[in-house]
Image 1: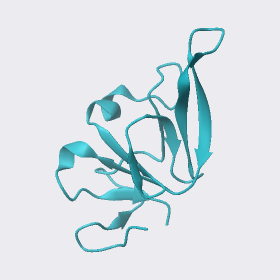
Image 2 (image 1 turned 60 degrees about the vertical axis):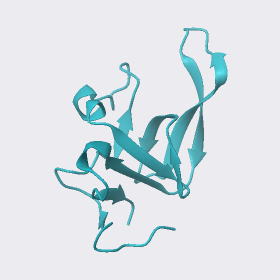
Image 3 (image 1 turned 45 degrees about the horizontal axis):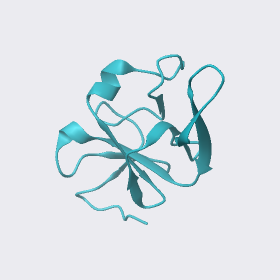
Image 4 (image 1 turned 90 degrees about the vertical axis):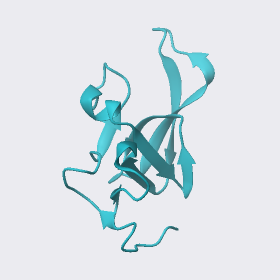
Length: 102
């Protein structure tokens, strides 16, 4: 697990941390284009992931696409993976404040 250091503090709220729950699907109530445009980095189970469709830090899960499979409405089929989730804005440089459960 990553440790809390002065360079990488554990932050749960504030102006420069991503929201607790966010989705890239415009149909979702958790979609926020303005926040997504800033670029959000996600670390799930101590591994940086770039394929996350939706996440929830407080509930401890991410939703990722299940291959190239589509549902009957043409939306990608996703699976929910549980574990520790951390999120940060990528436009803040090398040591941004990280939002994580804690």
